[in-house]
Length: 337
Image (cartoon, rainbow, N blue to C red; front, side, top):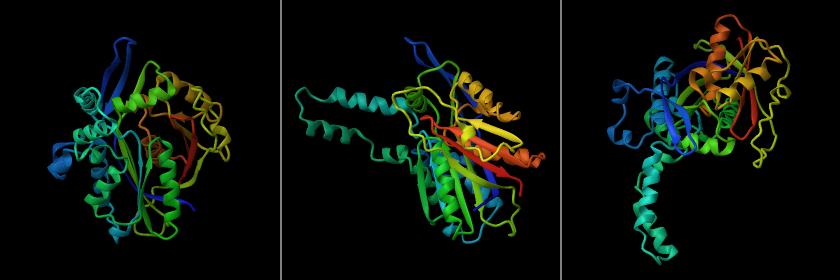
């Protein structure tokens, strides 16, 4: 079943800082962050803000803004699916807690005593700061959505799973909300570079985006475009190899797209290799890496939003291809309504 895109919203990274991760190895990366304006932040309870990551706050705000502009009937019953990427902010704070706990453990302590010390040192609300489904929980709390929901994580492939679940939900629900939430930064860099291996000109960002999806075009809302294909490959990642195999063309139903949007790279070199590959099957290739870097699951939703922009400029078919950190590939086709 085609999914009709009724509305979108996003908060893109706008602040980029170069961060040093290893003096010995001379490793640096560029971190992108979003801005939450004070006026927007006042909407959230102060007690909640203390435990919310930036991507969680950003997700709540963009969904509420989208719903204000496109108020649906029976909001409570709308399904909500969230794709979650990196989910730890202020890595140094969390690591210091662990270090301090082990410093305080007396020599000869039993495993039971060590475990008890760790639990005592863990803040009671740390789960709300770091659980992958905290984004979904806070969105539901601040929007009043009580319909079917799920969180998928924590690579960019989670957005494919969220869209596939949305397609199933639209068989019985008139509207579905999908949201992507990625908390970039040191944790994201440390996690993903340990899988791929460090490369120069690494760029990793926080980014959030949301879509309001429907199954019909003949309602009161304007239809921006329709998603006609959501497909992922089934190659099993080889955890012993860090090489990248680009086989996106095998997922494409044809080569009729006006533009091919690609994502998944964490470095400039990897991004250029992606573009070179894509140009072999389509002369018009777009990547948002130069602007934003890698945004985990938000790569795909930002690709869909870019596809809508290109359709409004005259394109008819846009293919969006992505690769997650484990090399799993996917494709989404967006077409003019």
